[in-house]
Image (cartoon, rainbow, N blue to C red; front, side, top):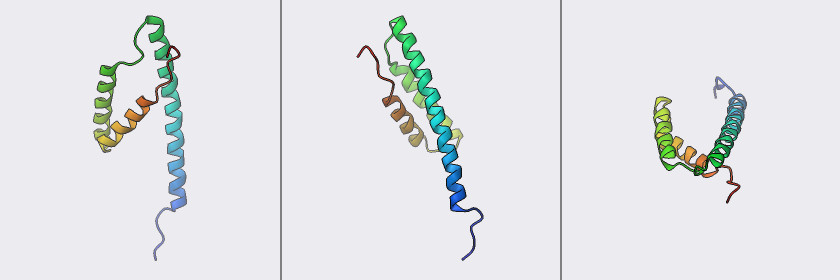
Amino acid sequence: MSTPPQSIDALRAAIDKVDHHIVQLLSERYKLVCTIQALKRQSGLPPRDPKRETDMLVRRGQWSEEAELPPAMVIEIFQRILAHLPPNPDD
């Protein structure tokens, strides 16, 4: 049996670093969304913008193709992110 060029443990550690970065980016995104929602409340705008969300999903699908990722997977991930928007305090 030959030795693999990289150990599984090293690759898992690299995945952990990437996952940590993803969580940090999600936190940054969440904070931005909270700020936008506060501005929308102050302006009397609805908390959701279905057209913006649809356009966003299309664009993320295009980005995924450029990154050689399955668009359906990336779109599903962003749909889940949208499903977990910060709660609207007026609800």
